[in-house]
Amino acid sequence: MTEEKNNKKDQTELEKEIEEYRKKHGIEKKSWEEFRSTGLLWWVNRILHLFGWAIVVDADKDENGNLKILDVYPARVKFRGFSRESEERNFKKLTKYLAEESEILLKEVEE
Image (cartoon, rainbow, N blue to C red; front, side):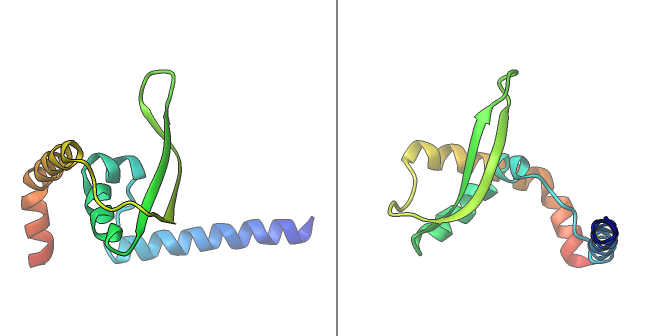
């Protein structure tokens, strides 16, 4: 029981250290849902496809029809690229994200 207690304490201390590191270095943890909804997952996968890789998201809809991410993992893939419809949809998503975040992004790089 003592070892289990020590492990919990070690885990709590590690989590605290990680949180302090994030704060110190300006790291804001985001969800996979947000990463996907902005179009960034698609953009990253466009690059990874060149090497036969992708970040795969296993998802399902919850009882309210909202997307619920079940798992995220890197994978080797045989396909390359996306359909024209997917490209158009995701370029719009990513462009919208950039338009909404451009002032913040500029401020961050100038600090």
